[in-house]
Image 1 (cartoon, rainbow, N blue to C red):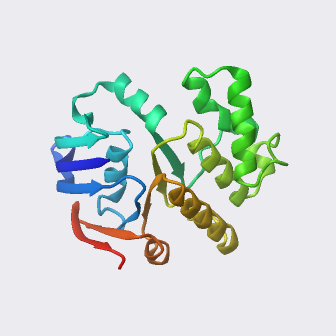
Image 2: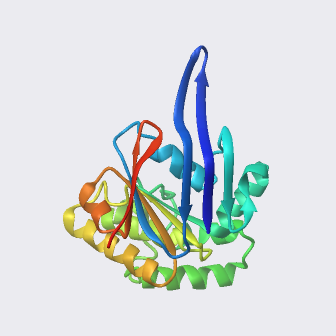
Length: 225
């Protein structure tokens, strides 16, 4: 599903140069459940941004479903993100003045789905994550765990093949975090490729594969026996 070949990412600020990624090679299979683990500054977030088509590599090739992402322009990458990739962020990034239903429906509006169809699917997704009775609440009326479930429903709006979760339990209490992890595991079991970016060893240990980043390189890549 995903192949990275000699991926480099260099950031330049005046005379300063930062090598965020150095010659990264990585293959991710369809329906895999894996984590990218590493301390701050290790390159894991930069790698996630490239996997999610939020950023482009300075050098190397990124192949997603047999398409060379490295050759696409900004609009083509945006279309790939909307159709194929779902994002879950630590800080949720919900629209504060919109209801849960409207937040979940937003990606489908951008994809051109008719209003009635997207509202029906948004309602079904909120039911799926256990928020059928909260769909008309705004983010400020929801707990952190509930907001993250809205974010997951939104990430699933266009039935993505790849789900990228950046510290998905970082702002949650233990019980809410466990519920989110269970939901991610269920989604992977149903065929979604799930990649979790984290510095949490316990969370990473629950995934089937752990890729450790250090100084912009893959330090280790272990598959659970």
